Image 1: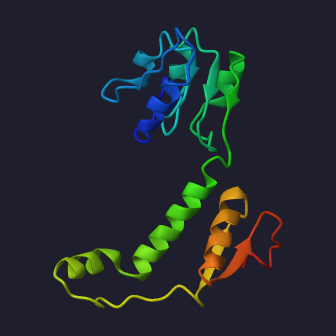
Image 2 (image 1 turned 180 degrees about the vertical axis):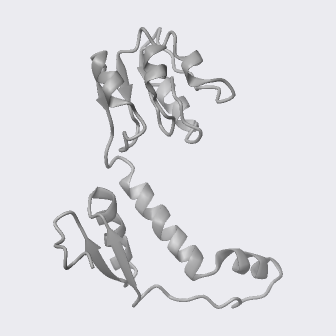
Length: 173
């Protein structure tokens, strides 16, 4: 059961790769998740909260596979009590996340909504935005995604200040 509220095209991509006789469905978010998991063997939480009640309502559950990195919203105690492994996929979407972060930076710097309206009105060069080249970007967390953001920001000519796990207290100030 795929539980996400977004990324729904992924369900089709998974479906075509499943062995014959297997299926995947998406959770209808108008009903409680606990009522949708009775026959589920594998749960793909995405951005759904997996509570002890959800785990208890899924007697056939064998695996919780988070299709992203975060597992904070999955009750580890309840899953461990039932010997249900929790797996995740850290870093698999690091490029997409990094590109989205830079897209948003560019949209803000270039005042994208105002620029789109001006362009539609055939006004060129307004509103004036700012260039990111020569600007400084602070990246907190230099894991896979943070590193990908930093690499791309440097490619735009930005100075990047990194703050990773090994930062000293002085560097954190």
